[in-house]
Length: 328
Image (tube, rainbow, N blue to C red; front, side):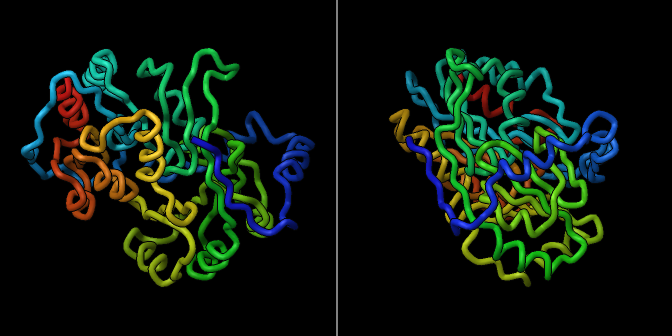
């Protein structure tokens, strides 16, 4: 597995230019707390997920004795609830699956900084992690200085997407994740899924950076209006997924959780028939279609369920644990 880079024009800003400007400013401590904007759908007591109304739906899938499966697990809405809490049942089931020798691969839209604590919570010290909707792949290794390393990073030039989105959503806020793990954002846009404090900048400087992920959020638009605006923007040359609310993740063309997982599968030499994936969001559609046993969470929207082979119970009923237990 090798690091990939889809660089744009040579006259773009280096990330260090903005980092030097940032380091010269006293923007930390209370300033960061004041800058954090937590969208309503991430606040405690509110839920981005629709009320679960689906009963589990099984399939003819059968466990093969002695096989070590690759199990791809989404985080938000799958391993953890809308408050970011992982239940004891889910944790115990994941630990049991890992102890059985299966390859647990966290596969999330979160950045690496927000994903590594989940790996730590599950006791995952070795293996692979897919972050940023496939834009970043990590290898976990306790022998490394930081206990992990980036083995694949796919970047893109966000300029055309930014131009189209700014016209379609004039009040939206934008954040950009770089291959080095930094976040840059407009209008003091912060989110806990970044896993790090975003450095304030303007949209013109964002357009001059290479991105592994571009995030768009609009507090002024309804989810329906936001989705319509995205359709009207006519994004080309990128991959994107609309979230539960007025939230959009943009990645390089052809990049998804599935593309990163396929590289991991080949590296581990796991038979395609021995792949399992569990997820609930629109950014999980390709992953569920890729897996031999794709499982949608009970609260997943219709288009996600349509891509899955099975449906488990909702995140509120420990649906991920139900699938993990079936593998041991």
